[in-house]
Length: 84
Image 1 (cartoon, rainbow, N blue to C red):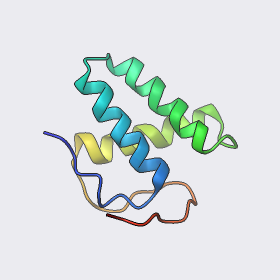
Image 2 (cartoon, rainbow, N blue to C red):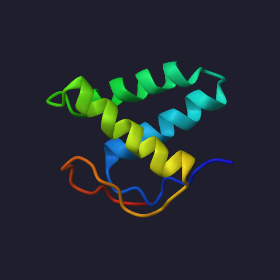
Image 3 (cartoon, helix red, strand yellow):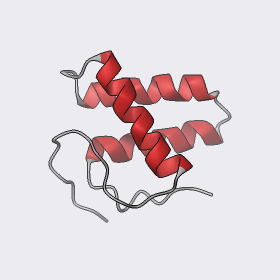
Image 4 (tube, rainbow, N blue to C red):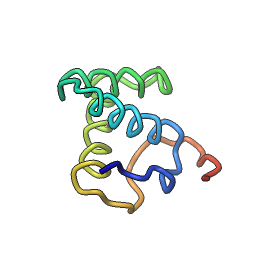
């Protein structure tokens, strides 16, 4: 069951969770998915260190994918995007 990303306000966060789901559906390993999602986050935020990116991406995956929470998350200072 896919997580609805419509409630996610940050463009980078929504991109990370969408990528996670799509790569998972393709059968990629968790390690490859995590590496790809971390890279994607750093494309949005090149100023972020690798450890910072890994921590934030892991928190987002836990929040949205594992716990399936719709509550707001800790994250970057990106302005909210227009939600669908």
